[in-house]
Amino acid sequence: MLLCPSMMCADYGNLRSEVQELDAAGADMFHCDVMDGSFVPNIAMGLMDIKAVRSATEKPIDCHLMIEHPARSINLFLDAGVDLIYIHPESERYCVKTLAAIRDGGAKAGIAINPDTSIPSIEELLNVVDYVMVMTVSPGFAGQAFIEFTKDKIARLAELKHRYGFTLTVDGACSPERIAELSGLGADGFILGTSALFGKGDYAQSIKALRALHA
Image 1 (cartoon, rainbow, N blue to C red):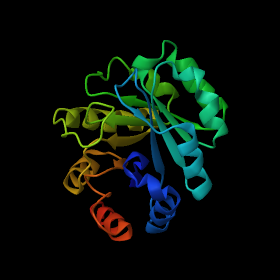
Image 2 (tube, one colour):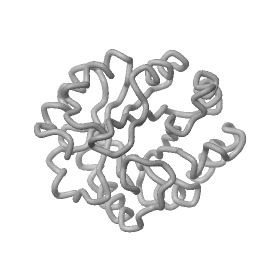
Image 3 (cartoon, helix red, strand yellow):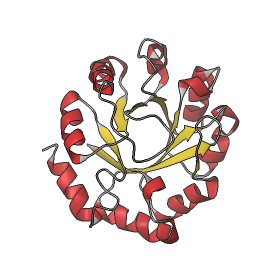
Image 4 (cartoon, rainbow, N blue to C red):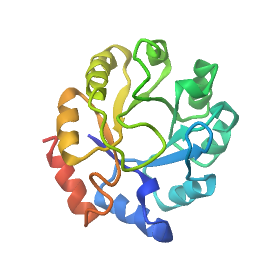
């Protein structure tokens, strides 16, 4: 089970030490949310923030691009040393081309699926992705309530991952109880925010407890 701390929730006054502590605690991948104030109404995590995370760990870093026309910015994130880039199908006219550019640049390619995005509308893209991330909240803000009907989408994608070969992750209100439930449905990894990790005490103890849910 992949456990990926959402660095949007970290203490930015001590970002380097936060990354190092999470790394030592057993985090698998560092999740960086990038928002442009247009595709979503919030603004978060700039390129320099991502470079700061990169300089503090050798673990993989993923970028969730909640921005318009991500193809224009892909090379900036590739040059920053990002290992996985998620885009939203609604943000780009030629998604297949953009996903290919991510792979050609040496990173893994992923799509993020909003609660109101149907599986049939994105199924063709499953041929050209390495990761699929299901949003169980509307993108753009931390601390939202879990949207129940997204569980059906996770279960369906868990069936499709065996056909297409992608890794299935979940982002949004991932509490320990949800992680236990959704891993049982076939989710491979979780983005960890304030529901399961940040503000919950010692990172190592929290991550150890979350891993035990998948035992």
